[in-house]
Image (tube, rainbow, N blue to C red; front, side):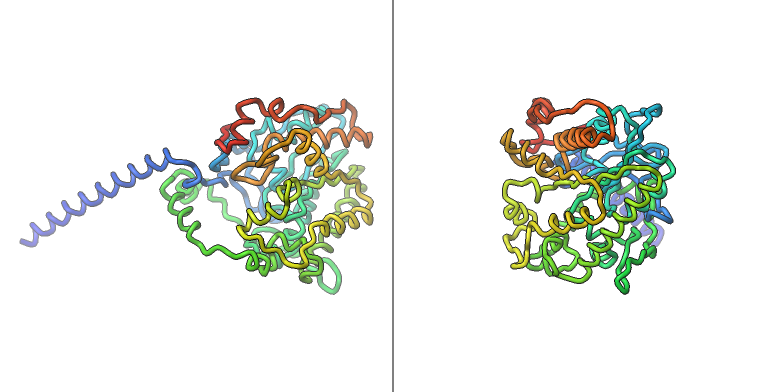
Length: 415
């Protein structure tokens, strides 16, 4: 009797396991056929921990970035870990680029990236030091480690107002769950560098990392659980000190003032070190949805799903304060936003304007305008030679009929 019971149990257990396996396989297959927004896993590129920088993209990788409206199948990095750019190794001029996710540009292919276009326009070697999540201080550290030894003739830092100041200050950065980066605090009115960051694990060669990338079932469950989290009201967003749009509130909290001081200190340090090696420094102000939109109040309301704004919210405050820093440090600056707005109005551009329906970073049109504008500004400064490239082509001429239609009707673009 006991033997029969054990035999029956084993048989029953085997049938159950087989049925579960069949169900999982069918579910996995089905999920691969439904829209990507339910199974998206965007961060497929790999990062290595770095004792000086916190983390940096893994070298010699060819990975992808997938969202509901974007499938970028090939994000390639060089032997250092930077995005691939055209080779002009014999060029007498080398340009070093620093920036965050706008410059990292995971939503566009290598050929459509502004770093590639700038390199081709100027016939120069361009080092793309854009890394998602970096702030000005971390970009300074990157310049010291990888750019300074190359002695670039030109250094360009792409500055995004909405999060770069926050990313420089430890309390604000840690408040957003960013524990893998070096940052700074202000102690006795002096900037103090803090390097107690956590080590970011590289899961690229582990089973867990492989499972996250390849299991649509895992991603669907994770996205469903994420969507069930409680949504904040507009007021609750702003009561979180580290919330990005608190940068528009003058005198809101001491740590934000510290963030501004750290930003000024970092830019002054970068200017000084660039001067020491004969590298001309340019700051490029990066426009995002709040800057390029037709109505910034509606854009913020759409993002936080609430039309609440604090009484002390001042849309012009960050620009004014940043301009004071530029004046004090004596750094040249190019503000891309007026150029983007002029182009928007000239061609009556519709949403998502220079971004994507599912992502706020530049689409290929944004990269094109940025590359052309930076090239033209460098020419006017006399830092490079070449030809002025006017932003006179229409969006359809730049993107092509199909890409234009797909971007502005929110279809998925595949690179």
